[in-house]
Every structure is written in structure tokens, then in C-alpha cells.
Image 1 (tube, each protein chain N blue to C red):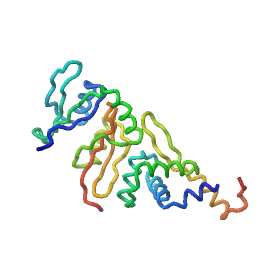
Image 2 (cartoon, each protein chain N blue to C red):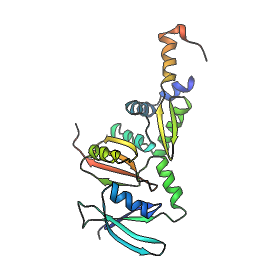
Image 3 (tube, rainbow over the protein chains, first blue to last red):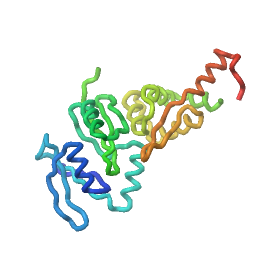
Amino acid sequence: MKINLTSVLVDDQAKALEFYTGVLGFEKKSDIPLGEHRWLTMVSPEDPGGPELVLEPDAHPAAPPFKQALVADGIPFTSFAVTDVNSEFERLTGLGVRFTQEPTQMGPVKTAVLDDTCGNLIQIAAQEPRG
Amino acid sequence: MGDVFKALADPTRRAILDELSERNGQTLFELCSRLATKHQLGSSRQAISQHLDALEAAGLIESRREGRYKFHDLDTRPLERIADRWLEPGRWEER
């Protein structure tokens, strides 16, 4: 058994595609019409054969209140690995991305938290030696 | 004023103030992460949330909604009144 898919619940798939590819820098892997919505997945250009991120509609009525509660408390929905949190923070801030947490050392990892514009907070994290 | 001393009597609440003095305007998530990784305080999110309520009741922090997010800011004015009371007694007025 292995993990090949993970998902974020987005309020608008077209807008999410724009943000996850154009801003974060992922690449579209599948885009299959599926009735009202699409089967829409991303991969990292650093690992095109790796796990896929599903941009999944948050159409279930329970999803929006759940997402809003997480966002209000600053809790990220998921986390992506980067090599340098500070330089990603600079790059993404330059592209107009809103961060709710600036780069901060949290024990062995440095993290920052950004708004994906689709109703989620996303953490970026890098293992960094302390000191 | 009594609330301030009660709020400051708790080590977790003092750690929260330490972290907010390092960076103002933190989410509950950031505060919990800092307390866990820097202070080895593994309190639940609910417990930290209650500590924040106590600090807010004492006037030591202010929570602010900004769009969909909620941030917590340090407010040191109650501490200035404590300092005034003993360091500059002439300025003290019982309230």
C-alpha cells in the first residue's frame, strides 16, 4: 500500500488551478470532466511521478464551516515541503500571496502559513539545522 | 487590576506573552506551535484558547478579526499601570 493522492477542498476549481499552478508552481497532471466538477490533480515539477494533489470541490455542506473554522484559528489544511522557507516567502509575497504566519523556526522545522485563496491555509515547511 | 495578577500567575500565560512580544499578531495555530516547540508545552488547543481568554479579560492581549483570520496582539498597558503603581507612585490612581 502506498499514498498516491492527497486532496485540498477548494471553493472554485478554475481559480484553484490558477493558484496552484501559476502561483505555487505545481503542474497539472489530470483534468477530466466529471459532471458538474472535474477530476483535477497537480504534481510537483520536482517529482512528476510522485503523489498527486487533488483539487477537490468543497461542495459538501459540511465542508465550508469546517474550512472556515480552521482558517479562523490559523490552522493549515496541509503542508508542502520546500527547500528554503524564507526565499519561498519572499517569492510568494512578491506575487501577492497573503501569509498568516511569517517564516518561523518551530523546533527542527521552519514553517510559514499562506492563504490559497480557495478557502484554505497551507503550510510550507523545511527541515533546517538549528542555530 | 486583580485580573492582571491572576493572568500573570500562570507560566503558560507568561509564555504566551513572551511569544507575542517576539512577534505580535499571531494566530492560535502559531501560538500553539511555538508553545509546543519552544516551551515544550503540550497543552491542547482548547486549553490555550482558554488561556487567551483569560489574558484578554485582563486586557493583556487583544484579539482582532481580519477578514477570515483571527490574530492576537499583545497589549502592555496594564503592565505600565503596575510599574507606575510602585515605580512612580505619584502617578498611581486606584481604579
